Length: 461
Ligand SMILES: *[C@@H]1O[C@H](CO)[C@@H](O)[C@H](O)[C@H]1NC(C)=O
Ligand SMILES: *[C@@H]1O[C@H](CO)[C@@H](O)[C@H](O)[C@H]1NC(C)=O
Ligand SMILES: *[C@@H]1O[C@H](CO)[C@@H](O)[C@H](O)[C@H]1NC(C)=O
Ligand SMILES: *[C@@H]1O[C@H](CO)[C@@H](O)[C@H](O)[C@H]1NC(C)=O
Image (cartoon, rainbow, N blue to C red; front, side, top):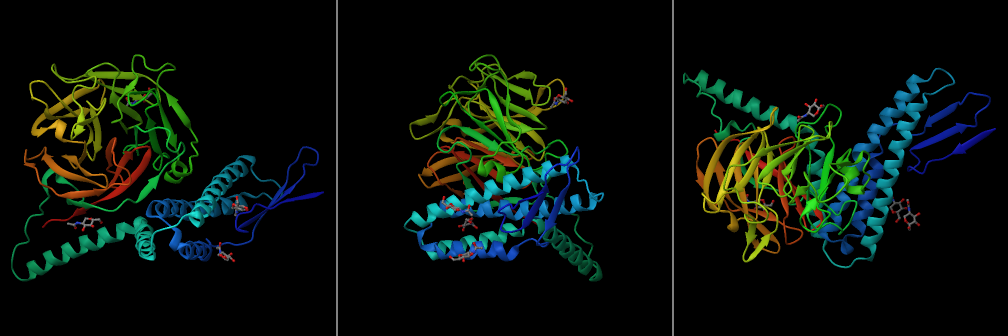
């Protein structure tokens, strides 16, 4: 007897399954369409454009992310299916391989359902313009070039070589290669893009305070994992990290590994206090509950180690980020990652409330490295992040705009107070900001939304 199970995957695959006879299970997998369905994707895009009069920028951004997720998943699925076909010994396919593919298809289906419901929502919306969609279309192209940005780098390197060669031919010695302060491999931080990802994630609107991002130093095989920490007790505490195997899983809210719990009760010793946490090298760095100390929770061994901050460090909501007369509670310690590892940003009594920055040395035992003292008052700052050894601080401008106004270069000690780089916000408050040195994205957690921006660097010669 033959039982046909057709998976509604844009007729991409027809999976034929034969009922088990005796102890054998034979499956026949027919790939009805080999190539990645770019035409289908552009069909969807076309259809999306048709509803352009009903689309808001937020919603289209979510669509973009979903499409991007699909764009990445489908080729992977096809590859796995052809691998399975190659494994075929004539009548028996590996059960494990089949499960992997079933999982992939389930995730793709979830993506598509989400895409479908997002599209349906669009049809009900009213507002926005065709212009916005054109922008997004350009952004989509931009996104598609992500993976090939190596090409750009090589071109730049070639140009540099060519110029040096020209100078050589003209009898001038080539200038020694100069690196911007902090030895930044990308050049100098000049601007950030409009939001690239904007999503309510798995628990829309439920947790107003939190942080999300990507481990810059993941274990092999976990390179595309993303993490999410939501404060589950008011704006104060949390006791777990939630992991997603990819950006699109985070967007559609499918958490494969699920929660990694620090402690079953909350709050208690080692509870996460405040939203400004980061993950680096498979460990979560955060402000420990009721302490002027940095905690490191090892996600593998599930153990916590701590390092004490200097005497006089303000904690328990006494050294917060603020704007106007509103402060963000329990933001005494801001953990950050960049190309060189983990940092902690805080303030002390002896610094009169100005920002202080210390390198966190991730080894065993956990300890503080060098410390720098800035002249910017923490209460005039809404958040901070690090990129290439430079500390950046933001301030609130209005509901739609936040400004990256301040920088402190740890290599030169130089401070700048008027950077004038503007962040386009999708909601009024930023609870956490952190920079991912892997892909140069700036991750923001804003009033229960997850938003990210691409940091733009410029090579300086
Ligand atoms: C686009 O919409 C048309 C009609 O509205 C439909 O026939 C077509 O299948 C859609 N294309 C895709 C790829 O969804
Ligand atoms: C999209 O959603 C509508 C309404 O829920 C449903 O009727 C339709 O079958 C869905 N389409 C797909 C491709 O899942
Ligand atoms: C920075 O980027 C924003 C958003 O893409 C853009 O509107 C703005 O003009 C840029 N600013 C500079 C100085 O390039
Ligand atoms: C976490 O624990 C594992 C297993 O004990 C260990 O191999 C790893 O080095 C630890 N990571 C950190 C960052 O301490």
